[in-house]
Length: 172
Ligand SMILES: CC(C)(COP(=O)(O)OP(=O)(O)OC[C@H]1O[C@@H](n2cnc3c(N)ncnc32)[C@H](O)[C@@H]1OP(=O)(O)O)[C@@H](O)C(=O)NCCC(=O)NCCS
Image (cartoon, rainbow, N blue to C red):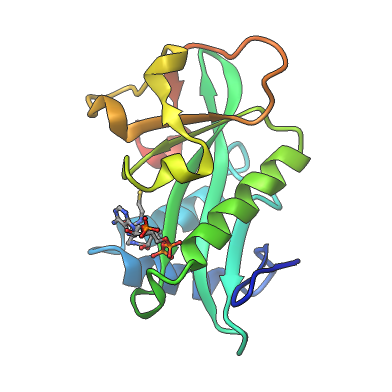
């Protein structure tokens, strides 16, 4: 468990699923991301215990969630960071950053090498993400170049390049 001034982060625990569903349902316009999290949790090829992280407020309320699941690049294992969500009334107060940082730290500790995210090009670079195209990594669908980003956690050895293969709950 890690504490910032305000937020405590920890891996998802048994019993957190409903609160995590609620965070994602509230943060996004539809329940699609919340349902995606549940589908990923049920997918034994995608889900990696310990890489679903939550941030909680001092009163114990779960306010943010960041999820890393298995994907592949040209057949080599990598992680997809998706989704990241914060309860609307808690956004812009560092909870999202706390959850993402905790997730990336957990991945690094687990020996993971590469994380991919499709998201806001003005948010994820603060964690070290760069355009995935710099590593020759491409999404399997059309996206603006700057929105598909990669973070190399362990620069030892070659970084795989090629097309990202998402797990089946992502539907691609
Ligand atoms: C995006 C999100 C996860 C960020 O978490 P957060 O706790 O609100 O953000 P933090 O307080 O950690 O960081 C604040 C920074 O994020 C930026 N930010 C927040 N939402 C953003 C967005 N939608 N696009 C770009 N930047 C965003 C803020 O501008 C701020 O930047 P600054 O530090 O340069 O001023 C959260 O706002 C959220 O759940 N949004 C709705 C769902 C969503 O869009 N998820 C991401 C999908 S890629």
